[in-house]
Length: 436
Image 1 (cartoon, rainbow, N blue to C red):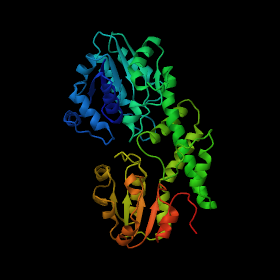
Image 2 (image 1 turned 120 degrees about the horizontal axis):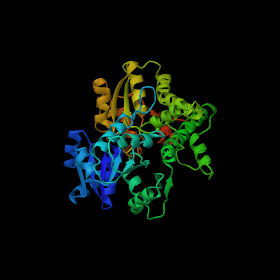
Image 3 (image 1 turned 90 degrees about the vertical axis):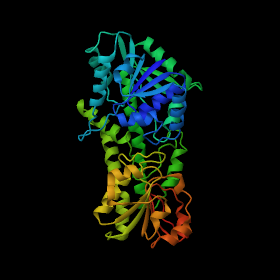
């Protein structure tokens, strides 16, 4: 099958490469000439484990190519994926201008053959219908527009695409559903479902799923904050809750808030979609408020401990919003570091993948280390924002030798409070019972 994927961000690049891996001929399109030139030289513009290997293999086998020419790619393909960004506007609504611009270009390039347009971008309910109207105004060719939401997690996106827990196809056409179902059959050989539903339901499922996961995170963060007050240990509470089969254990880890390109935007998008229909989304509003407050929690703990932060040297481990990605969008590290800088603190930070992105955000307002321990020399505190595996097994003696004060603020609860305290450190975390 000849397939065109418009957009080479996290979603487009993973989708295009994954479809090529199963034997399809895929061309990925992007207007960014610099990005396309890099991809043509097997230089991946994002950090995503396993993706570079797949790109190289499918480029070598001539199943995957890259171009800036939308018209040529669309006209030569049977199925066209829209996988461009849908950023959040200042008022929290979803900016669909990129999706609609691509729809317009697809309409211009359709030719005479029937095509299926697959909306892979995360979009509010009703977008597929609007995309269809835009294309229809540009062409007399027959086509269908379907919704096929992605459920990719940064850091495991390749695995999520190649072995999905479910695939959702939103269409009113049984014939179209069967064609797309056949396209995805190689990915669900173990029996995971392909669900066919109306287009609006598919669009809503994406938002509902992300909002529910964000809700679980914010709920556990509130429980952790209460544990801090009453002397309970949120780790014990989390385990006790997770053993209830009605609840389960996933997304119950407390911390300093969720970030990234999906959860913050999709929660706000759901809130604003409700407002369009005069329906207050009170739970979603609370989820968002809790998350924004949680991002400031570590700063409050640091401020309470030191009181005066001017000229204090603070080491930072982890900058990305989660491990296995270089993405810093909506990361708690940005909020906390900016608050520390406003108090006059000196920051030296390390992250295995996100340093270059951090430089675009902080420029020379902070220092950058190229090993975790390099940041610790002369530091009065270590602040952990991201639970990278390389941070988990601390060399406590080495840390003690490097730091002038032995204080750790752990925003992800990755250390054993007893072990750290017994080694002679002050240890501050999220919702863990105080070690006595």
